[in-house]
Amino acid sequence: YDNVSAFAAMPNFGAYVDDQSPVPKPPNKYASSFATKKLCIVMVGLPARGKTHIARCLERYLSWLGFTAAVFNVGNYRRMILGATQTADFFNPDNAEGARARMELAIECMNDMVSWFARGGLVGIYDATNSTKKRRKMVKDRLEAAGVRVLFLESLCTDPAIVEKNIVETKLHSPDYKDKDPEEAAWDFKNRIRQYDKANETVEDSENCSYIKIVNVGRQIILNDIQGFAQGKIVSFLLNSHIMPRNIYLSRHGESEWNVTGQLGGDPDLTVRGRKYAKCLSTFIDSEFTKEGKELPLVWTSQLRRTRRTVEHIPTMNLCWRALNEIDAGVCEGMTYKSIAEQLPDIAHERKKDKLRYRYPGGESYMDVIYRLEPVILELERQRGPVLIVAHNAVVRAIYAYFMNKSQDECPYIDIPLHTVFKLTTRAYGAEEEVFPLEIEHTDQNRTPESGDSDGGNDTPDKKAADHVNGLAESVRNATISRRN
Ligand code: ATP
Ligand code: F6P
Image (cartoon, rainbow, N blue to C red; front, side):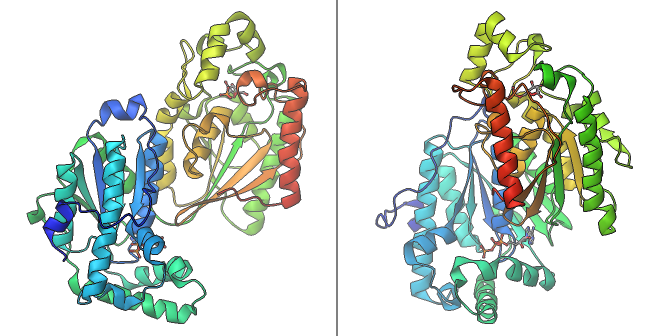
């Protein structure tokens, strides 16, 4: 059954499930103007090699950059169609019934991915073991026939300790082992790996393909025939990323003089309350690090006075990035949202229609901010220790959107109040969040209906904004810790 023509002919094995694949959004201009050819990243490797982890990280990174990207995980099709009840024997290559079922599932998932590509998807990630040459040939032929370029991404582990850790960290919590004794589950999963290993073949040059091999979590990375814009982005991401959990602290600067007057941009100083926040932030960092006997985090700010002043009590050097400066409001710099609405109504109107893509005349759009933050994101991926970033509303939104996997469309509306620290912890399969509103009062005249952050109402903008901030602060205070992802 496991033959090339079965895959290439794309038979319909019965509609087990409706097509579950996401409806792709139209790609934004940046990604689509560089990457015109559809690409499928075909994951390769034995179980517990981090394929799903890598697939999800790439999906998040590429989506953040504006590619329409989606993961198609064959394991999820198995659980959805057959139920999560298979023991290791199901994966034995000599078990004809198991092999037939696995083939059908792979085809079902592939069919959905191909129709997703036909509807406008740009980078699909086919997440399965694809661990034999025969299977890879089928996958490649099928995708190339659909006009999709193929990149094999293989994860190899020669260190058994890595595999052992992965099993404990993720596999024992998998729906495959719900309510199972952990020892029994670990034994069965290791047995599953042995079954796959019987037929496993690493990717070879003779397969005439583009490939990336990641050996022992990136200790070695091997590249072959890498082509095109998207593949270049994928390589630079993989070269920089690692899997150690770490903390990233995000905060806006303390209240500035222009937060009080409601003016956009500029280089204003902190108010008295903003300076209080600077002290409070230093005490917070002290409680997280010094009191715990840990080294202080790296501190990154923008080049603007209000962020540098906000970290001035933290006794460590800070790195000032131009890329962390606030969105440039161009001709609107120094104006309030109210005066823009009165004097430049077209700008107010156009921005409200498409806040993500609207570029202020002479200034920037949110998309521009996202692209200029890419080196910051890669540098954050590379860092092994904690980092505190003190920046601005639009910039913190874009960084938060990356780590918390928020869509580009949501990004310009994410609620990032002043005087609040967001502590993100990176983990396998995503990040966790804790929110710490530090108890220093503030006014932020820009959190008004005119800013596009809310849809208006009967309250005065001021009161509405204040209620909004206080509401969040209150709920977080009550919960102490809030996890949103
Ligand atoms: P399966 O085939 O069973 O679905 P998988 O290969 O998709 O397994 P994951 O579910 O992604 O494996 O395993 C997650 C674990 O892999 C996490 O503990 C993560 O830290 C780890 N991991 C991430 N990247 C790598 C890598 N390059 N090499 C090995 N392990 C990795
Ligand atoms: O509130 C201050 C500010 O940082 C402005 O300088 C900036 O233009 C604005 O927030 C960004 O938020 P939005 O994109 O919601 O207008």
